[in-house]
Image (tube, rainbow, N blue to C red; front, side, top):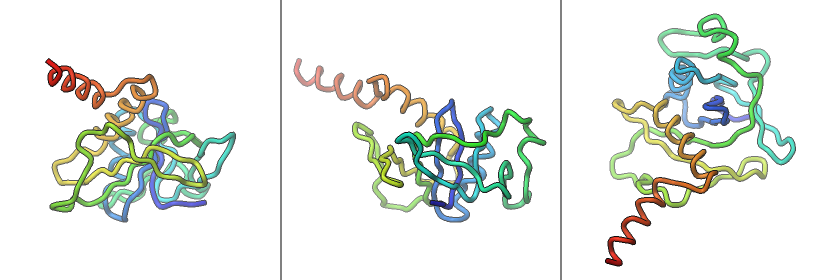
Length: 170
C-alpha cells in the first residue's frame, strides 16, 4: 500500500504525517530532521505489515529526498549527515494535518486517543490543524513524548482529570 505523506522517526517512534498537498508535511519533516530526528520517507510512503506491525519506507527512487516548495529537491544526507535518514520504520502514530477551519472541533482534552486502521493495524491518529503561527514539528514531538508516557500508563489528561475529581470530592 502507498500513501501520500511523510514518515519520520521521532525519538525512535515512527510518525506518519498525512494530509492534503501543500498543508506542510514536508516542511514539518524538514524541521524535525533539523532537530535531530530521522527522515524515512517524503511524499510517497510504502506501507506493509511485518510481525503484526505497520512498517513504512520511501520508494527507492526518492529515498532520502525532501521536496520543499520554494527550495526544490533537497538530499537530506548531504545537508544533515547520514544519521538524519533511516531506511524504514515501524509506524507508531499517525498525524492528519489539515488546514485550520474556523468553527471546527479539535481535540482539547485527550483522555482517549482516536485510532485509525491501515492494513488492519490500528494506531493512534491525531488531527492537527495547521495555522500560520503553529509549529507543527513541536506539536509532533510533543505528541510522541505524550505517546511514550501513555505507553507507561501516564497521561497529562488523566492527571488533570484525577485532580479535578479530587477537588470536586472535597
